[in-house]
Image (cartoon, rainbow, N blue to C red; front, top):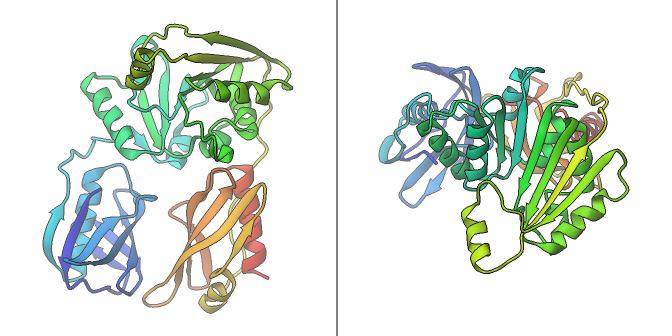
Length: 383
């Protein structure tokens, strides 16, 4: 991740405009945060002490996909903090290098209802996704991945091979699919998910994921699982056994059009490979979750700190938990929260300034669990 190591970094008052960027808020302390608006994006920069000085880096949750934007913002932050740069860890990157790496809300806002869409959740090396992009050029092939280096590797390969129908989102697939509109996709692919035998709640395949996937699929759309783990296959089949209006096909050791490097190794070890293909036979109703995620009332900094500093609401459906808070220079407070579905929570930020609260840099995804988390947060904040 791009970063700088500097000496004598001094937090500063905001707002402050610097050469194409506006620093909108800033905390104090040896470990702090700064909000920046640049290239039509809002994102966070962070600093913390290091044995060689102070490290400046972008927050990984809000970091925009354009690396030169991050690089420039870090250089401006160092200048604003009156720092001397000791070491640079800033990759060279063209401004358009990762334009196909989307933030979830931006992708959803720009998705056309007429767009034909295939989704691959956790694409690994990306061999299967790139093959599909070549053989089905009329589709947009969307990869959902938590591991950013895998996403960047895939997009670099797609760029070299001149594929313009590939896009990637850094997100938990379970949360993102829950936010998609009904009937949005023609295929959802899950190849070789981690079995999580000791932590089943961490599996991609859950009751909720299956239900949301079938809602998101068009009629005759396909949910496809490929795994080397027979127990995972049986588990997935159990999730599907009581669902109506689907067709299920199971295959063993069927030859795939393209094989991942892990599958190649497992075949050398004579391990069995299983496919589960689920066809959706019904039209899905439109999703009903539409939360505005607003904060109607005012609240003081001290009241917000008192009520939110130790929030911990955890149940079977959702979670709201305070992870960290920062006091802002010149007034205001900034919270990092664990938020959303209990099996796939997200890092969400809440900014309170001049007695007004808002999520930063944008609202949470439109999911039922995020809506429940928001309502619980309102009850605590305005108790």
